[in-house]
Amino acid sequence: MECRTSKGWKKAKALIDLGAQLNLVSQLFVKEAGWQLRPEGAPAVETVDGRDVQVYGELHMTTSITDRQGRQRQQCDKYVATDICDYDLILGESWLQTRNPDID
Image (cartoon, rainbow, N blue to C red; front, side):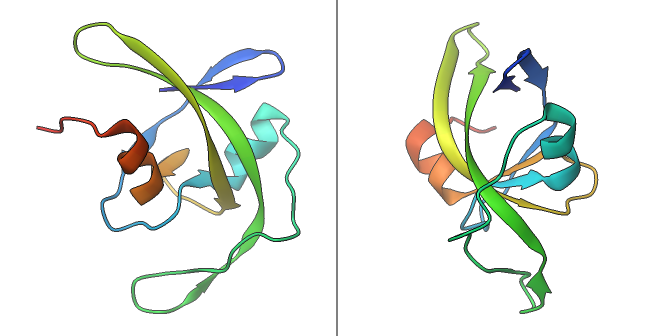
């Protein structure tokens, strides 16, 4: 998966999470890409066990993904920036609804 930045496309390591209600982006990835966040209006985020998660803001980001047949699709989605380990993006319910991927 790749994300559009002002300097071109940036590769991202993404996790599809069937239980996530929101799309999340790593705050470190946001800084590396040079994106500006909108801190006002960002939703509250909590873990499965109810613990609050630090939210830095939200942004709209265009991503590009290529399927097994080599077809590329670009789309803009809203992401909430927070601290994430091991991944740049967590793709949640809204991403799944708009892409409707065939997952093996």
